[in-house]
Length: 474
Image (cartoon, rainbow, N blue to C red; front, side, top):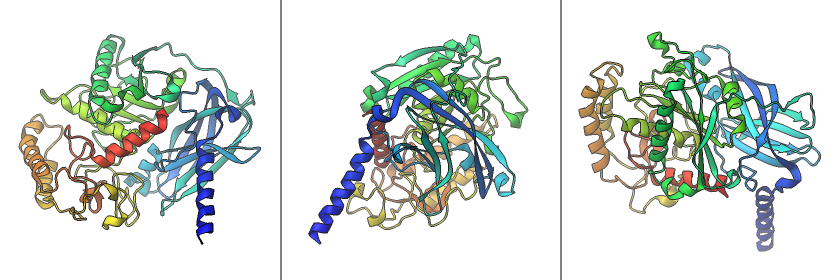
C-alpha cells in the first residue's frame, strides 16, 4: 500500500509539473491570438459561433503560468496542440451571457446574443480550442470546439485597427510578462473631458493601491491609460430617457438595474485595446449616478462623478469592489440590495467563488484553515436587526434628492452592528451572501464585498487576491 501511495503521489506531481512547465517557446510566438465569437441562447440553451480570429501585438501575460490552476469562473477555455493533444493553455472566465441567463427575460424563453473574446499566446501550429462550462455539480463540460490554423492568412486577421487614442503609462514596474497589467479606459469623456479622465484614473488607482493586499504588492502591477474620446459626456440612462453617443456604448439599467453599468460593444472595446498590453480592463464612466459592474476576467465599470457632496469616497469603494469581482473572482457577499437575478446560485450546490459557501460544517469550508477553534460555524450575528434596517433602506427611492439624507441614519446603525458584533474581525461562516438571505454564507461579518463602506477585504478575499497576483506576475 505504501508503495502504491508513493507512485500515486509521484504521478500527481508529474501532472502538476507538466501543467506548470509548458515550454512557451515550443508552442507559442511572442504575439497574441484573439478569438471573437457569438454567444447566444436562452435560459436553458446556449450556442457558440465563431466570428473572427486576430493576430495582435506582443503577448502581455505570464509565459510561465500557462495552465489555469485557480478553478475560478463559470467557463474555462482550453487550447490544445493539435499534433500532440497536449493542453498548452487555459483560462477561467465569466460572461454577461451567463448572468443574463439568470434574469426573468431569459426565463421567459427569450433568446439573446452577446459578442465575446478570448485571448492567448499566438500558437506556432494548429490548435484545438474548446470552451467548457460548469454543470450543476460545478464540473466543467465541453460545449464548443474548433480547430484553428495560425498560419491561415485568409481566416486570421492581422490588420490591427488604430483608433488614434493616446496610450500612456500611469504606473510601470517592469515587463508585462511578469506583471499584472491593468488598462484603464474611459467612456462618456469628450475631448475637453480628457484631463478629468486622467485625474479620475489617478485618484481611483491610488485608492486601489492604498487598499490591502494591493498596496503590499504594488510593484507587481503596471497600469496603462487609453484616452478614449466620445462625442457626448455621460452615458445612457434608459430609465430617464437619456441617450448619449459614446465610443464604448456603456449604459446604466443593465438587466433592468438602475445602477448596473455594462457595455455590449465588445468588438469596439477589444479593437481599441488591441495594441495595449493588458490582462484586466477597468472602464471609467463619466457620469454622476452611483453605479458600476464587474465580471470575472471580463472588465469593471465605475462611475466618476459624485451625485451628492461628501460621498466621493463611494466611487473609490465601487472601483475596488468591482475589481474584486473581475480580478479576484470574488462573489458579492451582500444579500439585501436590489438585483435583477433569479436563482443566481443553485440551491445545495457549492459556488465556485472563493468567498461564498453553502457549507455549514467547519471541516467542509473552503476557508477552514483561517477559522479559530473557538469560533462557531455557522457564526452568530445580529442578522434580524440588520435585516430590519436594510428593509427600511430598500423602501427609499435611490433617485430621490433626499435619498442620502434619509439613508444615513440607517447605514450608521447597520455599521455599528457590523463593528460591535461578538465575532467582528473573525473568520467564520456568517449567513447571508450571494444575493440570498438564507442558505449561503460569507467568511466575515463585514468586507469590501459586503457593505457600501471602505472596509478592508476580509482574510479569505485577501488570500484569493494574493493568489491571483502570484499567478499573473510569476
